[in-house]
Length: 199
Image (cartoon, rainbow, N blue to C red):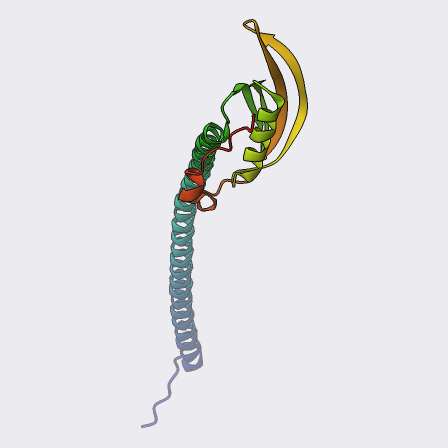
């Protein structure tokens, strides 16, 4: 007996293919969504990671800025301390210079000569005083010239003056300070006797 299929088999196959296509489309759509979601998550993660690094860098920059400010303050403090140190050293040198100057003047001052004022401007020294005679002023100038600390004495003026009913010679002279060097003054020079006037 011959069987005849009266069912619309082509229609059924078409529906089956359409169902397969719909299923494949749904699976593809879902896979696409999963891929897009994964990519989104990955990109968001990268952005968050980069933002975290940026925030860390900003925090480190703030810390470094504070350290730079501290370093600047320390440098300013160091410069101020060095400036004070230089001032103290200058004062110390000037003190030694003054001590040597006064020591030399005491040693070089002959008998009969009295100083009324000593003025120093840088390396220039002005001496004013009284002497019993003009020859004693000459002796003083020779003594000053022989000193390793003093040089180029020059007489500005000498005149007769009366002090406490005594007739004296009032003088004013300049002399230069040759330098601040302790090794220029040997012990023999410090003990050198002052030249006495001839009269």
